[in-house]
Image 1: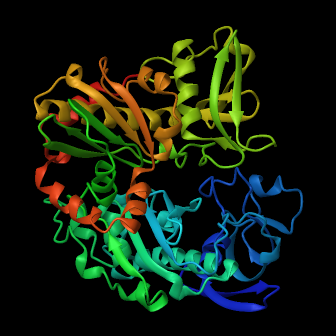
Image 2: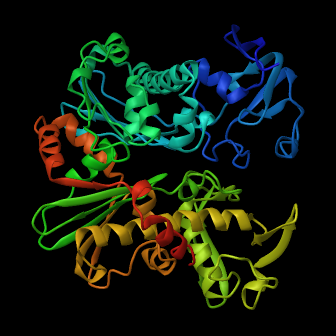
Length: 511
């Protein structure tokens, strides 16, 4: 069945296209350059991708049945098994696009993350950056982490698909913004791209398979030869293409750009870009840099959490326990749909502090007061789970996924300190990057021991420094050269080959 092709008709355009049987509606629409807003990553909990559809489709599951109308389907869950009809005018959730001035020229900054893609327009007349557009990386259908995507890329056809769906999504988004605002595509004069090495390679059509096996070869770290990358130049002929340089297989342009945004300070600094891959560095007082990367998985971005979603409308963003009452804050006015990474950190810290879970992460057999009024112990398919305020549920595996990220983070930081010849007491500035890092409750984060205890350090939160670096590259012609020069001062630590990493990781798992 998977190799058969079926026809979908998109209404009211009455446009027909063929897709492989077994494709979800969301992926079929993406192949037609129709991008949906799917903040829960396809789990069905946010219901932002509801469409009217008919024809030969999979049977509605419980998530879809909750919509209350058999013609309403969740594009992320409904699978096309034969000819079908989809009404796109029923789609209410699309990415929010900025309004541009059609008389001005523009640059486009792009951060290609493993989980999300962020795109921001820069008005080159006023030098003002527009609000960014956030999309889920369409490559997620090939795996939530880079190693799974690298494995898929061993098949040349899938490698080509990885490149094409990423290119198509980004190009289509830029075109849509231009069309809505009446911008001529010739007005796009710069496109600057930042991303981890796998994402940059994949976007540029460079073979990513050597990045997944020892010795993790990076034949290309500077991308000057891609300044006229044909797929982009064909659509945006006046655009100068800039791709931020990588350092190694697992320290990409997002890392080099992020470090490049840091202010010059005295003393030793620690930089940590929190994402699906955690990139970290120690910038020593003498200007030398020791850096590494650890695989944290997408838990902190909500993508492998049962009720998880990105921090968009419908997401719980924080939990607080005050006067024995558990409360939350969420985005939007309605009942929350899921939990974001920042709220997950808050919640696990509260559960740990109040004896609901062990330091090992195990959920206890009874909920102690005062939380028993707010949290109920359940069993879902023999797995322990916690019903939180009758709104969301987190299970034992969710907690475990956070624990795996925490263990990788703490172990990597400990080894980095040893390799730099420093102790936690020697760090004076800590820079936390990433959208997640910008909004965390740092006390809860530190209570869970994602990092060593930096007692002397002052914490700074930089947000998405990868996108920030791409924005700088749009307007500062010398920024790229400074990044290339700084690479000479970076020593990289390969944790996969480090003899102490596995033992340190195991010892770092407990909260």
